[in-house]
Length: 284
Image (cartoon, rainbow, N blue to C red):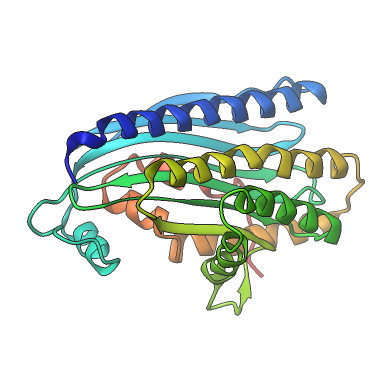
């Protein structure tokens, strides 16, 4: 696996930036539509050993209590713990050449109205001199579930998957159900979606195309749910349920999420890595 992948890496990084720009604009347009004019605060991020990105966070809107959209492109040499993690996932040769490159987009939205579901999405490409792969997905995290919202979100993800392989949706849905499960609580953190990792079919262009389609599916999957639930009146009890559910989300991200662990272990900006945490949460 040589530097012949420089063109592919540039294409992937550019796509994640493009998707980031589209989502940030759509979310600011939604806030403008509902009269707040809340905008993202954009902060450059860096990794000491190489690379960086943009952390974009919008707080205190009418729709979004806190939403972050991060994009990054980092490179360098993996430390011992990260090397061991990669080796455990079957990546060969990390002990002899620990160089890596990674780029991706990561999004987490925590909503004002408890009837609007929280949501997570990320897509990424990872490269080493020995292997490359794509990963990503999106999952919905309502504290007050509506079956039609869950159905719409899953249908959108399925359409993106079905355009590439008839088995992908069932496989990636099951992967999400397993990955986003909180063992110490004995429950899922939400109503699922899709998740995939280590995707390398040998056809880089096809795997990249799937990853792009998953990213393109996000806004049509999520925005209609937000628009539908935004006007719904909510009570103090609804808010309490929302805050307790956010506690579950925080527990998962701090204890189990592989992206959080890798980001911290590889020396990326801690504020960007922990952007996913909710602004306010409760535990019973």
